[in-house]
Image (cartoon, rainbow, N blue to C red):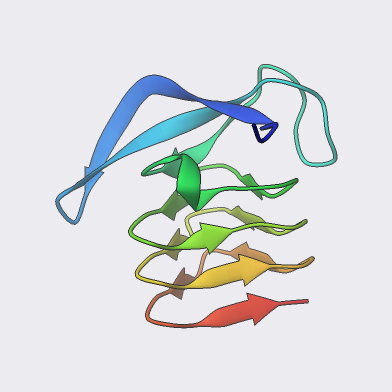
Length: 102
């Protein structure tokens, strides 16, 4: 079983007909402290590893955020886009088959 740094809360929003859930940090790590609220994801498959989605960022569809990546501000990541490595996305929209890493 994979260890996660977050859990889904009961707070949800609708984006493009999809239900997204706000995340909450469950243990201290590089981007957040236990109890901090993050952004919104559609499901646990959207966010893996030590990556974080903060502020009001929204991740949905088959998009994946993993590694040490961070998506925050009012960013949107959807479709099959992947953000990974040490990439940071702030206030941008990333869709399609985009791969952003750093």
